[in-house]
View 1 (cartoon, rainbow, N blue to C red):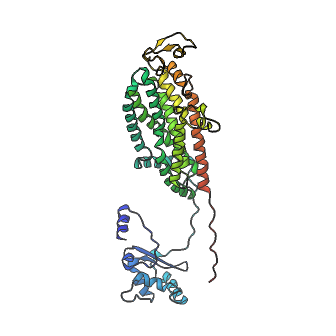
View 2 (view 1 turned 180 degrees about the horizontal axis):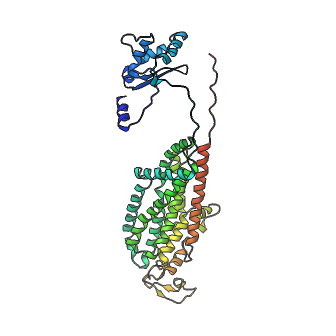
View 3 (view 1 turned 60 degrees about the vertical axis):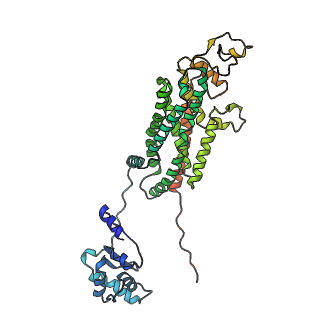
Length: 427
């Protein structure tokens, strides 16, 4: 109790305790006390004056007695007569100081809730504060994405060389860039699951609406997704000599891809058990990486499993990113023109590599040739400009999960039933 009083003084707040039969040390820590019986006030005032009040009404405190326990005894019909309890209750208005007398009054009608825009603005401010205080949501992930990207840039540093042997290494780096950063929102599932319990209570208390919460959360997400993109792409363009004229396009696609997986994490955060939600997210992430287009050809997968190749976002991001960084690439070394002959396997595309007579690592000299060569084995890659289509599909997947999240959020925040009345028990 001493510690609670110190907090109340330092923070300038009031602490209300509901307690039955407190010990003497606990009772001495109260500033004021309110004793109720039969829905009436038996005493309301400074705790230190309770003994004096009992003495004034003819109920003096016995020696060495606990004032709180004795006061509860005299107002409890289980320990004393009903008439005696009534006398104690009737005595309060006669002996109470005017400061502590309270006339019965009804609560004023509650004012209407704040407007939708006010709710959104307030929630954005609160979420921005939480973002600073809770690094697991965004700031820590920015640092992790930066460090992981730097690690892969060092591992694939030779992919900056414009030689045929480094084409596949560049493709593998793009695969890691596509898949690894979006594995980190698994922590978001746990954090948002804990936040959901708070949001649900606040929505039911009428503080704000679920749609205002969803919109505020989304507005704060968008700049963070671009920040993730900057942390991942700036090192890649600087260290691996990617063409800067494609940076803006790649940044937009990367941010959209990150936002889509953020929406997936939000959706699974509504799972009752956060660990189950995290496992669900990791399952979607793994299947999406498996069907990204670099592990195997999607068209070689049987139906209906092949639908995963088209309805998960990673394949579309891999396609757009591979096109963006390769279509504007400077000429690669190691190829010479040759006459196209169907019977000559190493010259089916109008070029060949003298150092590689079997054409195992011969992809072409310009971006179009390299994309076509990769597309022969990986159908997610193409020399056709489908970046806008890929971006639209990524966003459509994200919107689908976002809408599903909002539907379940609204349902969870508004559902419920009135408690049943207590059952009568026969003894």
